Image (tube, rainbow, N blue to C red; front, side):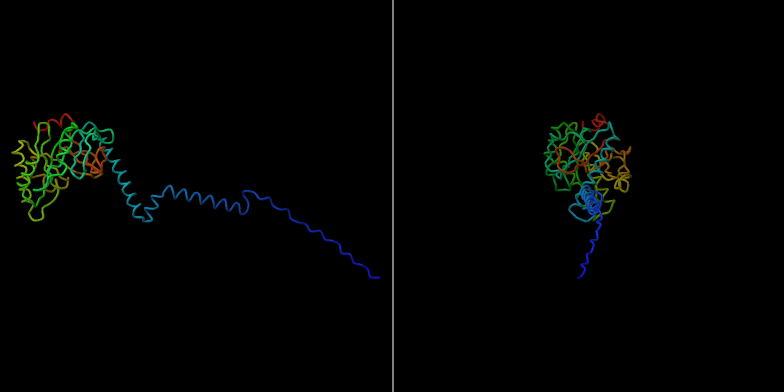
Length: 287
């Protein structure tokens, strides 16, 4: 008889399963990855304009540059105005500002009231500003001290330019003296000829209005070409540089920015400071 072999069952020990927690295994890895994805998205959204700028997207780049330039300009404008508390503040306009709603033109930065405005009347020997009449009347109705200026073209006859300005502008009591705006150098004549032409315009206009005109130009143009030969005139100087923080003692007016915003005017507008208060400004007006 064959003996039946009975094999004993070997008991198998199983390792206990580890309890899955939030900080273990794949779940931990997914959580960490998810966290960084969220952070990356949030960072990208917050700095989206800057990233688009540096990545070279032209439309965003242009908007970013414009916004930054506007912010910096606004900061400087406010600082300059703050440095000149008590002095009369004004603007200058032309047809390039379009049709102005003068009923809304009141102050700069909602804090500095406007006392005066210079308005372009003519340019060269044949151009009348398309908005001069509207601006001239609008400024008067808005009770602002107003003045008219002529944009001088060096290569055109100076007396013809003076004649056009006289024909276009009628000054009344309380208006500012006429202004000659000279910014460019001549192409077909010498500097001496330019100066002769400027003096002819100034003398013709003074003879008609019985008041000495004011000369507008940039600080560099003034220093290089006009300071010595036109020392008998008062100057309105344009300088937008950050290093210039206060008006010079020799300047009658200072145009310190061309990038200000103002209610009633679309786009940018120039802002000027008179070297005195509003009462002193009235002393130089036409009698």
